[in-house]
Length: 459
Image 1 (cartoon, rainbow, N blue to C red):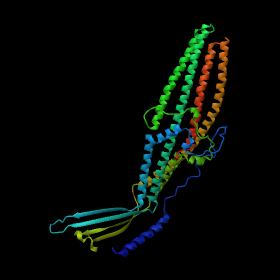
Image 2: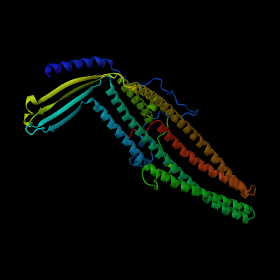
Image 3: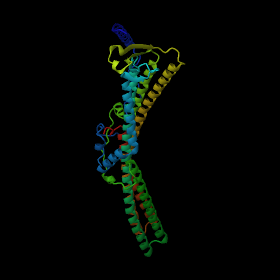
Image 4: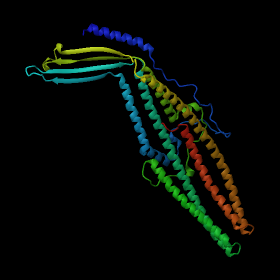
């Protein structure tokens, strides 16, 4: 094959490619402007005061140094989180493979054949061939974009797991501190119940009450002791659960007190669409849509012909010493154009399925935005309700404590019976326990809002 023929062939192919590139069938992804994102989150009549919520990173959001240490331990040791990072490595390998599709493939072979007859010399062949598929319709480019979208989707999923793990550790830590508070309060209450039993026994000896009053006081003491056992068991179970999140076997958990726990102030939520875009699950849903969009491009490109350039060459000689001679050189350049004609409807079926997958991915993306908006709205309502409930519970406790003091004074004067005092004591204990529960819920809802806004995932 002479050089003039090779140059003419390459020139013709280049002109063909230049003409066909103007007919590229792959499309560019554009986000729809009809997404279900409202201008404002649904909130109750009680406004959240202060400024817009920023994303300071979870190490700045949480002020408890012990909690920060636990979160770092969970990120390093939690097995599920480590496995989620492995998915990112798999996606990265697929991206590298997709990028390599632009590179020509090269194969080489070397053979040595013995002669059939002893008086004939051996034959030696060294051969190599190169082929390259021209990306006329954007099929290779769309495959690469799909792989890149898959990589960033895996990264977003890892970030979502990261944010979830932080929230789970923080909430488990808060629940553990709340149980500690309830346990200490119950211990103090038990001391009061023991004193009350002595008081009732003294009143019985003075003739101011009867045995029934003493037995009621004892029953209340045993009830508090039973509650103390339940709380001790709950603390142990909560420590075990938090240990699993931290990635180690069940053991005692270091913690501070609930009263010293603090986060950055919860603030107004700003612009919904911008905040929801920060959520890793929303990012992952849109990246899944982008991947489906690009795979639809790939399926559409299958209707069109594929162009492949190939070349092969090598040396063929009767003796190894003759390889360096020009006559031993073999070389060939070719171009092929393959157009699908009849293939059992395979291409059309693949294209139809790809379009359906793209529609499903769009619906999933829209649903992720709806769910994200709901989670933010739920968190706002819960924060407002918990703040309001705490104020009411504190007023209730103050009233019940005054009622208990009055009941004791009236009992000493013989104006009421022991049952009223017992009921007043029970009400005070329940209110104190409820206040601790509401305080822990205040922090839990703030963590819920922070996670709902996608915060703290960038470290």
